[in-house]
Length: 135
Image 1 (cartoon, rainbow, N blue to C red):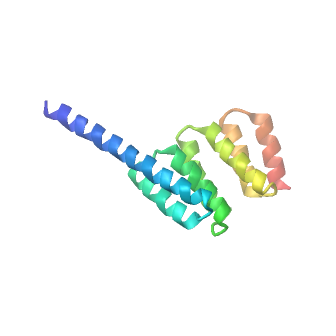
Image 2 (image 1 turned 90 degrees about the vertical axis):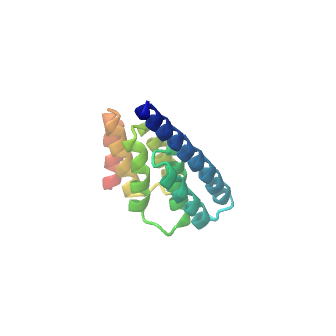
């Protein structure tokens, strides 16, 4: 009985954490749309403290980092790698494609895309992406 109550409490904490992450991500989205990226990042960090597995927050954080121009490509790749680590390689590719639309010459973004494609077993497109990255 005690174990069931502990599991029930953990489940409630987890859903409360996810709810908090959703709320903070929505706030971050508002600031993102107003191009107030520092404020957006602050809310997204709070979302990820509540639920580190909340993919939507990682996605928006990466986009905010790209647009803020205060962070390096390494920061962005590190952020979006959480999406890939969660097994969401397709989501990671969408993020990278979005970033490459903004900066088609980013060698690091092409390299990261090559890795994501390779992880999905798409070897020819991965080779194409790494070839672009090496130019």
